Structures are given as C-alpha cells and as structure tokens.
Image (tube, rainbow, N blue to C red):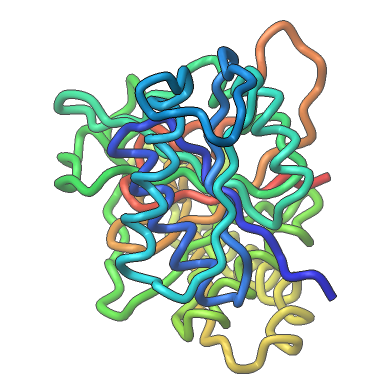
Amino acid sequence: MEPEIITAGLDGSAESLAAAHWAADEAHRRGAVLRLLHAWILLAAQAPDTAPERDQNICARQVVRDASEAVRGRHPHLRIIEDLVGDEPEPALLRAAEESRLLVLGSRALTVWQSFVLGDISLSVLARAASPVVLVRAEGPEPPDHARSTAGEPPAPAVAEATRPRIVAGISLSGPAERLLDFAFDAAAGRGVLLQLVHGRPFPAHVYTPWGIDPDAATELTTAAENELREALAPWCARFPEVPVQRTVLPDSPARAVVEAARGAGLLVVGRRPHRRLPAPRVGPVAHSAIHHVTCPVAVVPHG
C-alpha cells in the first residue's frame, strides 16, 4: 500500500516554514511522506545541468530547498518530496489537497489582534479543499483576552484550561460530524493526549428572568445537551477506547465556545460545510472565528 502524503504549502515566509515543521512532525508520527510544495507561475523550462548563475528558477528552488533542509534537521530519515510546480498557487494547492491526507498552510498574525490573515488564495483553498487543511502560525505570544472574542462582542466566560496536553474539537449536534470526529479521535490517539469535545448552545430566552438566569431551567437544558453529546460520541469512544475524552457543554454560541475552549490546546479541530458556489468562499462562523482568534494550529475538516 502506498504511504500517505502530507503536503505543506510554501511561500518562503516564516509561517510557511512553521507549517512545514508541523507537517513534518505529523508525517513522522504517521509514517507518511512529506511533500513540500511551492507553486511558481513563472517557472521556466530548463535543462537539468543549467548553471546556477543562469537558473531562472533559483529563487523558487531556494524556497523548497530551505524548507527541506530545515525539516531534515529534525527528521533526518523522513521521506521528503520537493515539489516545485509551474502553476498558480490556488489550483496547485487544491490538487495537492485531493492527493494528500492533509494540506498544511502557514498563517500570519498582525498587530495586537494576532489574527490569522487569510488572503483570497488561502481562504479559497480552505473553503474548497477536499481534505482537511491545517493552519499553522509562526511561534508568537498568546493574544490578549479581548483579541480572542469575536468582533464586536465581549469575551466569553473563560473555560478552565486543562493542564495536560489536549486536542480540542468543536462539535455540532445538528449536522454530520463523522469526518470531524474521525480526524479528532485519530489525532488524539496518535499523540496519546486528551480529546476535549466542545459543544456550544446558547440558552433560549425563557431561561432569562428579570433577576438573572433561572438555575433550574439552565440545569435542565445543560443536562439535556450533555446527554445528547454523550450519545453522539458513544460510537467513537467505543472505537477509540484508549483516548481519554472530556465533554464540555457551554451556554454560549458555538463560535465563542470553541475559541475559549481552545486556550492552551495543542490543536483545534473544527468543521466546515461543503462549499457552495457563491461569489466569495465561506467556511462558516465557527471555522471563521477559529482561524482568526485561536493561536494554536487549527484543522478545518470538510463535512461532506
């Protein structure tokens, strides 16, 4: 059987180098092949023995070569494919996603907001890729609390941060989640870490009274949601008995619940709906909040 391929998209930035390292670690863990891909539309056809001073592609080749050398410093025995493609980045990355178990891209953070800055190409690839896409930042400080909240909203109540290594996955109970759960449980099993499944569900209006939240109604609704979550996860817990699972139900919007729960996590896993051919690519509110406000690597898994 052919080994799996994990592809890292390169553009010569520190963020894409961080993506290459993350992809290399994952390939090493899975016994997969790492493909380092750089798309350069101006790639010129040249003879193999072209002298370096006459090589029109030398800068593009250097992007791949630098990433390969950096990765080999940590994983000297990893099988690496250096792939320089003469095409626009978007179609090259979308083809790579079809051929790979994972596509890994770097994301930039700017100013105090430390937000993911996704250009048209990255967002389009994220919305259309057939395989999960993992977004990785270059190492940097945690953002301040106000930067983690969704735009125009105050920060959600803090979620108790686990002291042990963990993966966080946001789950909806109203749609398909098989691919997301398969990815999240498999990732936790491969790393031997806790998997925290987070479900956000705001309280309905009748829970709120003039003097605050009705505790009995709140408890009843939370318990019902916890039971639904436990039932939905039962087949996966049986399939992955070695994975310790923490179920978390928060009375908040799914997007805010996931962003808050991801503090201190090693990886966040979220889903996205199949892309509809709209004028602009969309990934959904949960994935959108995650890729803009979470500092750990974010895996976006297509539902369909």
